[in-house]
Length: 190
Image (cartoon, rainbow, N blue to C red; front, top):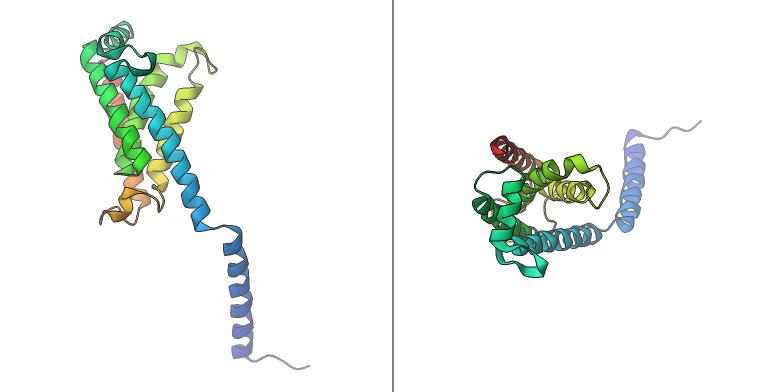
């Protein structure tokens, strides 16, 4: 029975592996991945920026600083108007950062921190709308996912030397910072 030489076997397995990789790359385009991240960033980021606009400027039927400040005070937070400004700025800046893919880990962490507080406020109302927390949970998870995965190739971060090549560690540290900040703010709540 003829046997293959080691070099023939290695060449055959290398060719087979190369064919499998070519077939796999045709099935999953990196551009599809990046387009999906862009869509998620735009929708989540602009939604959060609009929520911040409600808090800061009263846009889209929001309460502005005074109305939102009263809500924060009724929800047990000290200095309601100051909290409204902090939440509004965090949502606007974090949301716009996600939308354009600028400092994505920090933008995602900012949204995570804000939304953890929103979950704390809505927690007693069950899971589903209108008083539940599923919407806030979905936004939190989406922001954390973007912080961990990075913005994809269609983002401003691609032009920043430190963030050009996203690292999981950047996102993980940012999410931990967002959660810790949320925890400190929650400790201030009555």
